[in-house]
Amino acid sequence: MQRIQIKSGPKITDYQAYSSLKSTVEEFLNNAPDYAKALQGRTIWMVNSTAIGGGVAEMLPSQLRILRSQGVQIEWLVIETADSAFFNHTKRIHNAIHGSGSGDFSEEDRGVHEAVNRRNLPGALECIQDGDIVVIHDPQPMPLAGMLKEHRKVLTIWRCHIGLEESNEVTRGVWNYLRHYFKDYDRFVFSLEEYVLPELKENTSLIPPSIDPLSHKNRTLQMHKSVSIMVQAGILEPRGPQLYEDYSFQVRRVMPDGSFGSVNQEHPFDLIYRPVVTEISRWDRLKGFRELMEAFVHMKNKNEAENEPGSIAYKRIALSRLVLGGPDPQFVADDPEGKEVLDELIAYYKGLSPQMQQDVGLFLLPLDNPKENALIVNALQRCSRIVVQNSIQEGFGLTATEAMWKQTPVLVSGAAGLRFQVEDEKTGKINPDPADIPQLARTLEYMLNHPKELDKWAFNAQSRVVENFTLFSQIEAWLRLFQKLLKTPVS
Image (cartoon, rainbow, N blue to C red; front, side, top):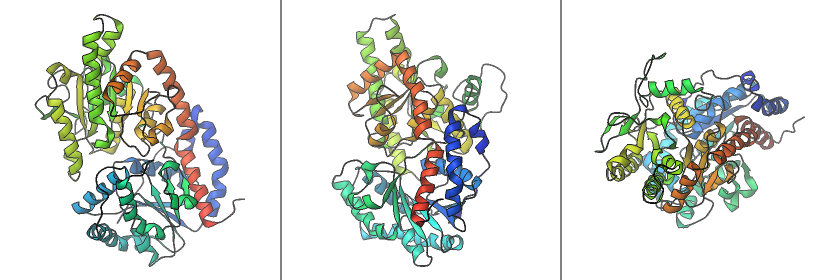
């Protein structure tokens, strides 16, 4: 069990300095002291399976810093294991909750799941004391709550960040497997009402995820800073003096033959000179990468066949480029499924025409330095004409929230977590079926050819994020939940 140390970061006064955030922060500050008073003498423990990568690991540092500034004792633990069978098992759980794969889980699977948590128990017991509150995130450490309660008098919460709004044979199978652990929890937290099991409705709180507007992934970047980051990362060729050194690991791109090379090795990608459509996520079939690439190719071919060369509409589509970004496999050797998905995308890419290969960039983002990775994503989103999240299923989709905060127009699928965030043709565009290639292509074409509409949606989108999806609204929701759980009235 690893105890994660939180680095220094933005202070409350830094958030207050932004006029768009000021009222949200001040409302939080008015309420937080009373909630914090109810928690005196207790420690809140956040427990998950990784300190790097993924939405949970991104959200926790900022939340912990803000809560500590208000006098709340809160810590972060990460379970440790090198057992590939455990990661394969929990990835199957993740997919099954989204209705994908198989819902059949055996007692042998349970043995693998519980053995890793049992090995982490001694480290947890060294930290967690009677009276504390333990928040377990997602299925990986889910068995730990019952193990802890054999030794400590603690309150436990299970925070599930994923879900599917409909039930099928696969989801019923995985929930039957996980139901074994429900008795060990005093409260449950889901992102959306649609994800809550009927039997848990009376004991569940809804807390949507949120972003930290001042994190490296979301902080304001002026044009020259965005360009500088992309030069340092190897996405753009340097065309002048550099203030900072290149990053140790550069963004790589899939080459026409399927190998990996530098972004501009074959041809200049010219990212800042063209309308760019971008999707950044982990390599996962549920993210809809393949479908988006097919739709982009379909749009390009249709443009060549039907539109008048030389027209503005023709040029916008002809000049557009697609970026599909995900983790560089050299940094995620323990994700065999991610490599499979990337290999499938590479196979399709290799079959494209040479011109189409120039217009599509499969970008491999380094993960050696979390700050640099976050800045690369930030710069790519800010330099994109459209940020897409074409998920087949999506628990929430913070990549859409991030782009909305940056006033970059978003196109999302009709997955419940994305549909909850985006108001169609008000704060972005919803394309209901991510697998309907012709319709997705038409939606892309429409958006690229209606720049004033995009600008309006993007402007509205930032306001929606400020009002609903910043870390202050989420932190206050957690404080209300802790107070309710302790049954301590707030003065």
